[in-house]
Image 1 (cartoon, rainbow, N blue to C red):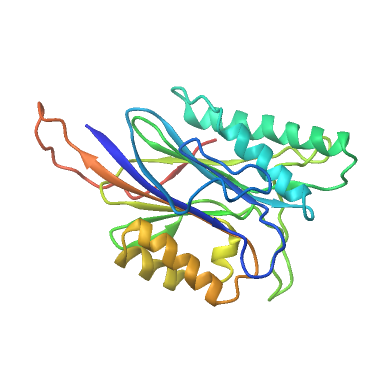
Image 2: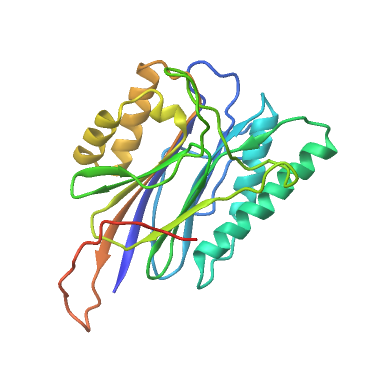
Amino acid sequence: MYYKIHYACLSHIGNVRNINQDNFICDGHYMEIGDMSSIEFPLCGTKTSKDASVFGIFDGMGGEECGEIAAYIASKAASTIEIGEEAASDLSQFCHETNAEICEYAALHEVSAMGTTTAMLVFAKKEVVLCNIGDSKIFRLCDGALEQISKDHVAASAFGVKPPLSQNLGIPPNELMIEPYLAKGAYNDGDVYLICSDGLTDMVSFTEITEVLVSKPIEEAATLLLDKTLANGGKDNITIILCEIERQSGLLFGRKRHIKEKGYKHVN
């Protein structure tokens, strides 16, 4: 038995920003710096669990250009990840190597602060593995219920003030050793995963996001979520990846009873 992964991806500059500092990895695709025109959105397609596939979002920070470059470095590096039997270990290694690469760029170009969040999913042969650093989020819709399965890395802040990040890619190891959050879970027929930058979640409520994902096919849902974000102000860049799982049964073995596993387990 294997699974199909149907995906839809889009990225938008928003209504306020002068540049899109978000980037992504989607079936090997990512954006070159300053060139959104090279990809026609929404980017849609289908993968299978026979071969591991990587999807992720990188929300750059550190001022115009610098944040964009950090996100680009991460997305380009993500396009070359080789996923083996231990996907969680491969993702952890990616984070540490990419963190070093961003720090090296910052030092070489005398940039005091640049970095990017990371929110990634690997659809491996037997399981789904997630990795995140920062506050870009990963949600899972299962049986009509939406749940955040990523972990926000944020510091305490005053009530009503958006908390600053406590971790991101681009932190020199002599200042802080990054600790990416890693977890894994089972494939479930019909599950929908949402990976997004905070340009979406700051503008559209959890309830609205749930209603869209429950009621619309993923390509239409991605576009509708973007439309809602822009209508509500679009104060930041917006990047959305939706992945829907479809179970495929082998003809030789017939259909087997499928029991859904809803929990995600943290990987140390």
